[in-house]
Image (cartoon, rainbow, N blue to C red; front, side, top):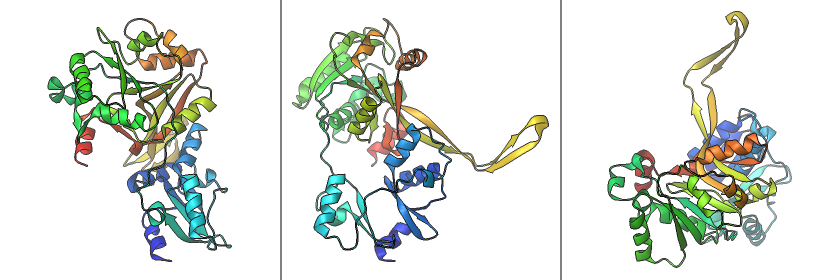
Length: 354
């Protein structure tokens, strides 16, 4: 085994018998979206975060073996291919790595983006050109006392503010039309953007005269927005391909799509399941429980703005209304490491210390 494959053995190799939860945890801990799957030292294939997302969308149990979701039709390089061909294929697939597999199915090498390209792995992003609504009217009480002075959207992260960091991610996808909901310290937010005068942002504001919940103020845009649009909280970052989220939204013909982070909790005890008369049915050692957490990023169709009543109204109430009416609300899953809630102290401190 060469040095590169030896390094993989300690970091990004996973046994085919492991479950999906274990694969997600390993991706998070190794900060990767790709794992190499083996069975009895035989290479079986490459597992990606996309494979896991598709499995979650299909409601496959996260305790199932990764062998049940492994895509055996992935494209791999052969030892006889030229480096130029491998580079071309990696660029076309936007792949972070390319396994090299011989005629016997053995993994003999792996090329990573950094091996073949001099530039940092930064793929051209699909230009979406959709409007973005940012909900920035709250007081940000979780970040007090900072928010006693600054409105939460303007709390600094490095050389920029929280809201600019969010907006820049959308700008990289060609989204430059921003509608910002304001209430608390609204004049401070407006004055700040007037001062920086960033030509990448085309901003309009809509004012909450009183707290309207996470969706109540959206009703003010019912005569403004006429196309599919994003909604984002002003204190979250989602490190996911926005184009993939939009593709899922459109292919599934959703009226609303919520992005959810798959968060796993391990129970450090043996758990017992009992049946009738308290008779033992099973024992599980250190089981894991997984939940889909609302990240605060959504895609909505403009017709939904007419479903929002006047007054205080949460977006979760809108989601529940649609569900009860058998209308489509999609849930797009992402890894917990691809979501950051910058509105609480622990996550904010982690971010500024990076």
